[in-house]
Each structure stands twice: as C-alpha cells, then as structure tokens.
Length: 227
Image (cartoon, rainbow, N blue to C red; front, side, top):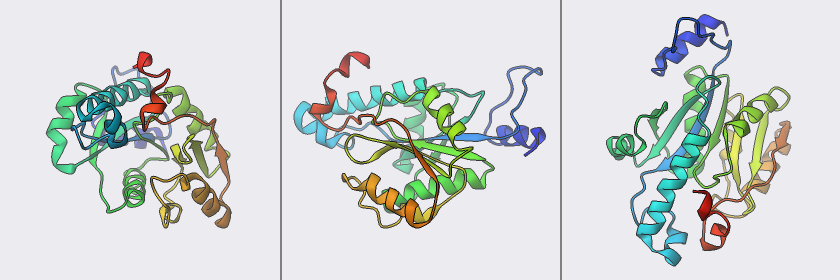
C-alpha cells in the first residue's frame, strides 16, 4: 500500500493530519474496541450480583474510558469503537466525548459472528492489520497494541490469553472467519478451542502474556485504586 492510499484511508475514517509535515505510514492498522453502552443491568451482570447494577455500570464506564485513553495512538493506528446496542450511537458518542475514535455498530447473532464481522469490515475498508480488544482488561495499553502489530509480521494470529480461559486480545492480518465458528463463547474453553482451530488450519500464532479480565468481585482485588 502506498502513502497516498494511507492518506485516503485516513480521510475515509475522518482523520486528518495535524499539519502538512505529517508523514503517513505506508500501511493502515486498526484497533477494534468492543463495548456496550453502560446501562445498569445490561453490563457486568456477574459483578452486579455482588456490588449492585448501578455500581457495576459505573465501574464498566470507568474501565472503558481507561482502556480507550490508554490505547490511544492515532499516529500508528485508527481506533474504531464497535458498539452495542446499535440504537445507542448518540448516547455512546455523548458518553465517550471528544476522543479520536470512529464508531460502527456490532452486527451478528453470536459474539463470534460480531467479532468476525468487525474484522471483515475493517479489512474491507483497507486495513492491513487489525487488533480487537474488549473492556474487561485494563492492563492493555498502546504498547500492547503496537507490540501485537509488530508480532503480526512473523505470525498469522496473535492471542492475549486471559486468566479465565478466554482471550483479551486477538490480532489478525486478514479475515479468517473459521476461527470464530463453533466456539463456546463466555466459557473457560474459548482460548483452547481457538488454538485447536489454529492448529487445524496450520496457522502460525503467538501468545502474549496472560492477563486478568475483570468479570466478578474477586477480580477487583488490587484493581479499584487503578481506575
């Protein structure tokens, strides 16, 4: 991809250079952030059983903002927030505020469908590499994303294992829909089932360090003070 192509893609996403001296990279990378509108009773439902729906929603909102801020790096990649529900775009824009992110609704029936469709969208729009994260792991930063992008030069897929048996990050350099099919989402089998698929299809992968997702009250130990 030539520099002119990089410029066109950035303009498609509404990102303009800060000055005429800005140098565009020869490729375009995308960070996908999956999030929900922080409505009480609709987010962090396991955590809400212990601390209440309102506090759980407030915590979810704080975590999401921390992740968006800590992963911001517009010089190296575009950030696209894939949000749910699709009817809440205005509310989500108001909530997130003036941050350098793009917005697109999640589409699909299952979580696997939604993730696969998000990757397809950003690759169809010209991304060379794409990384997806959620809002459960507050230890992810722009360094994590840039390291993932670099590691994709030698691998087909990058996975960030979570302590609960899932993954907090996944990086691709092309759309591979079959790795999202027939996965028992939201269980402790997700990572192992995904790796089985990677091995089956002879895809080269690399695992990042294991991190903790925040899903229930036990995961909050030593975390609240950092939000």
